[in-house]
Image (cartoon, rainbow, N blue to C red):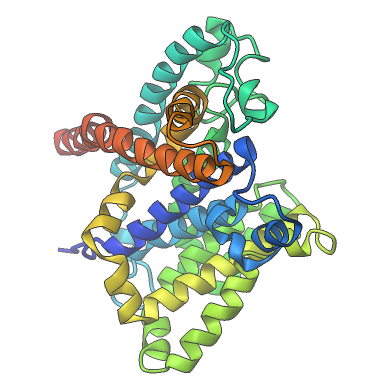
Length: 370
């Protein structure tokens, strides 16, 4: 009987760090960068130093990771997927419950917060907030019908208000449900997989993130080969890491040269190379498997779902509290950023315990009943 691979904790950690990157990006859009000098701004905006708030790169990492993690368990003996072991109904039920139910729960919470805040003026803080964050809910009146439309994750409305970052979740859900097709194509050969993937994106209008998902699937297919080549070759791992970091953070430096599709492809390639480095580096795996980082990885989905509500509804109050301690702009920025991340993490721990785990348990129970 086929047994799935043991869960790879360090890959969860990478997802968690990517989720914190998205939180940081939204905080920067809302409250600016921590420094006002031209040189500092350029370094934090147009160099690899902006990796800590590079949301484009983080989204690319999400989709490459998804392809890798969901596929890896089916490549148990080499480059041939164990397609016969794929339980389509059970997999579909698990994915729908894993992604959709926590989303609907957070959507309901966001709808309640929306009702409380939409008619009140934004709080005034010494660290001024941008209109992007203060008007995100206030400038978009929603009816109950509008809110219900946002609950249908497979086909969200053009304007997403309550959880604006959820546009990626629709793509994630659809791509993950197409995994069996990807495994069948991978069984035919890598050429078939890449050909149909490119045709789907170029001619059928499928999301460019399909390519990212396929990058991850190919990493799973050649997992053992990648590990064998990179283990013991430190110079090669470092070269892949350096090139990967450049590609991963290249969106702000190559935006004059590449269109949006090109930028997404480059960042996806960078994410793939960085994952290759981690797969071949025992030291990196050890660091990423530290207990604190693993917990961030576990609650990464809840962080992604909840952080915008925190940023809109709670961060202004946190900043007002910090104003009693300091008037220094950098101190306010750093305190607000850290407080937003810590509060998002704490709420995500609760969400993971009370929303995500019960949804996963429900999926397991339903599959046992079949």
